[in-house]
Image (tube, rainbow, N blue to C red):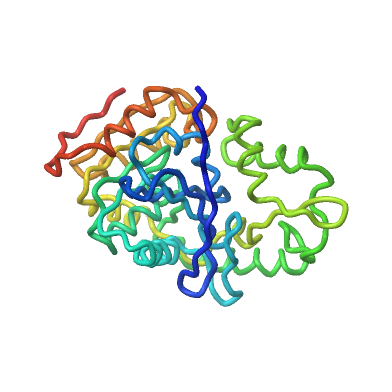
Length: 308
């Protein structure tokens, strides 16, 4: 499939941080907020956004990701902080009504955003069912202690990109693409990895390094419990369409664990592919389902449908 990609770039000050935006479509179209996953960036929607009909798609690089600025050292990258940023971004854009298209961690941000903003017409989740990383309630203290130890270790050893900002991490683009491809579930295509990597790479000296904040690879001291993640899913009141990969992160027990928390006005669709099936090869069925969800004029309740 080939489609003209007339994407453009913009940057806005949101809550004191510069947020980079990747934009597709005409401003007169239906506003769609596209939220990427963990360690990804706005390029996650590069192959999908051009096919969204009559839509004005705005994909931000979440704080610390891609080309957006990093948070201060005394702040973090909690899902609720991302959601607060996105809520402020919507205000900056002047949107009265809008839809949300989220992938992976972006669905977790979206589930919290739904508690902050009641102007959302519909939500579409791609291989995500809310907060991706949760802990057992009884593990809260140990998790905080472990997070603190890992941060001190990274700072002391200069691991995980905590080296000097002008030091080289990769001697070639191909080395960076290879590392990006091997993260998460290992199913990301070479082309998909390249699209994400090119937005996240910074040329330094005789090589390259990641733009994203290295703190992103370490666990946050406080994470949502599974119960809290499910609570945020249940409170979503707009129509919710969940698109999952048959070889993605929710193929199997993970789906069973979350499916009872989906609000009753939900539809679930399964597609061939892994975690990034929307980036690797957005098929006709996926595009048609998303366009139908965005074009839906009825605001009434949807009947739950799990399409295996």
